[in-house]
Image (cartoon, rainbow, N blue to C red; front, side):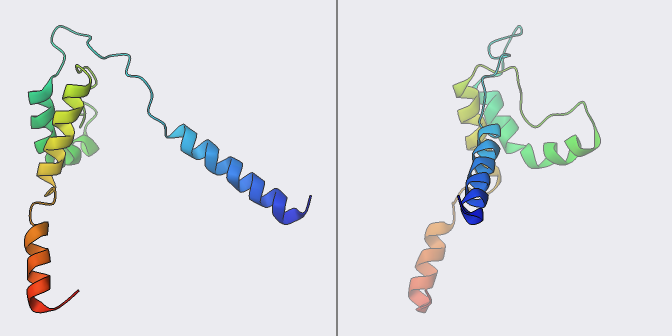
Length: 105
């Protein structure tokens, strides 16, 4: 094998290992506790994620994601709340209309 082929294989193997380490795993705390977080709490925590993130940088008692949740409905509410908190493409249609009227783009 040539040296360039060995380097390419090593880079490919390294990329596969890095991507595999980022794979999501199961949450062993799903449906644990007395009342696991549901859709509405996920939605609320998604809305307040910018503030919660800043606070979580300075304390170990605040997390931006509730681990003890009921699974997919909490995740759906959380992602919906985060998308609303960060804009979620609300004004994208008006930007496209503005561009087409002005002749830009």
